[in-house]
Image (cartoon, rainbow, N blue to C red):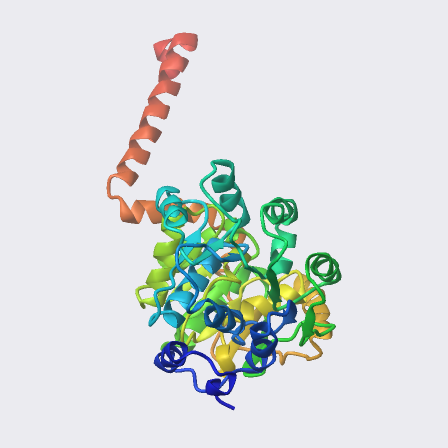
Length: 428
């Protein structure tokens, strides 16, 4: 089956060919026909299966030929990275049309976003919080919205966006086509979708999360204090591969990134404490090959689209199977092959077994050839904080002398205190 079977506009077929899409993925085959008929849908599909094109293509098809000057499409997403990614997909698919899209999210200046609203771009891809800011400033106008998409709806619920989403819904016309797309749809999201959708078509809904079929999974049992050393060994073993690695918290992401840099590995980092410019620079550097490793928390699991990503590494075992699916879904995209590994400390084995049970597969436990599992110079991730001081010292020659001078000043102060209380002879 080819995309021409959907009777899409010639400009869209030309863009599809330009992107190198050969034939529609399963979710695209299922979703595009009912969407072209104007039906609401609630769809689940594994990460990397082509969900974005599945909802953008029918929307673009219906917009071509309509009078310009109105914002008719609103896509709500949980993260800034995903907003940018979908906007880029729109630009690729609409490259031979005049239909423009804008990404609206926090952490950057609202001025260009306000201009996009004034210019009435065809589509707005937004995080709920920043969109509400524009609504409160009477900048955003949503009265012409005819297509509403909630992408990664389960993640938005996890992140507490439900009240914001309800406030946004109050500003939208009742007459609209509503689409729910996500890799997982837990019961609370299904209940929300049924409240918002009008006789929706349910597509590919599964009782459990599934990873893409082309991904090879492996687990490496390892003491917690040796994880960082093992990751270095994996980097040496996979010299030609770029690696995206996930940590449980932003603090562990910083500690791991500092450790890798001290060992000569160029890496970027993405987590909630990084500014938008820092996150963008890290992702661009990773995509462009300047960083071999990108260390991230789960905030990045649903917004990173990197072509030919070599390996996804779970430095920490995720809490839930859904989180695992989204993490490893950064590789093996669009039916391609991919590799995923998980570093498993003894106290994380129970969590991994729970994930395996949900996924319906057991990951083979393997060891890295040549790695010294009895190493004495173990470095625990929790101990990385002091290493930051050493890292700064190597980067700033003036840092170590300052530290020495501070120590000397403290010793002199103690000496002066001793002289005041005990006399010069006692001080000596």
